Image: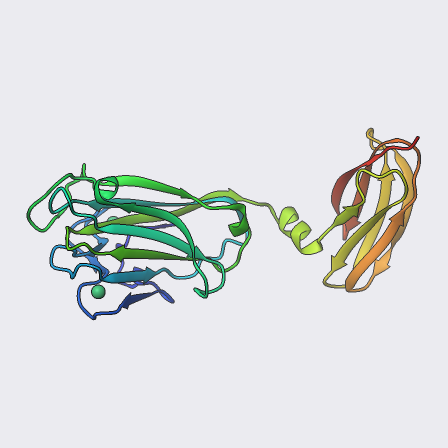
Length: 263
Ligand SMILES: [Ca+2]
Ligand SMILES: [Ca+2]
């Protein structure tokens, strides 16, 4: 998904909002300049009040089918003078903004893309910088992720944001099913019996088979219809070696390797 702010409803977004404590300068969508097209999001620090904090809380994004997630955006900023320290921070929240985790924080020369500009800054095409903010694995597969763009003004010069993008690896349906399934195999490695646990959200046709590495059936533990809920089965030992524990739910196979070490 990419947001180029070309359409008016894109900012602050359907369930996004702006926090502007002093009711003065704050984040706004502009239609006069952008890294893409002629639209972007801007805060005018040039006439802002030093120390003021303004937040844009983005809409919530459904990342329940994505892993290895990064937030990308383009930024443009100039310093009013060589001591200006306007700041841009980006945080994320997995609980609708109850708590925020910091992920990006630049100010002064590190934030600037155009050096020192003594008039109210408007970027040209070469004065945008691509930013890539990688997100931790705790964000993977989360259905409700918000970002907070926080401007802390030093009454320096203007900051612009454009081309907000969330990238990652789309996981296939099987993997999402597997997360729901909560397929656990423990202990592993084991010297004795092992256990399989999983959860069904509806009545399902289930088989549980122990196979060797060539895929040959060693033992069938289960082959029946099971109801919704958590199920647990013992896997008896069949001697030292590596086994494939094949849990099939309604024809979809979920395979784990089990290492057995016996004296
Ligand atoms: Ca403000
Ligand atoms: Ca744009």
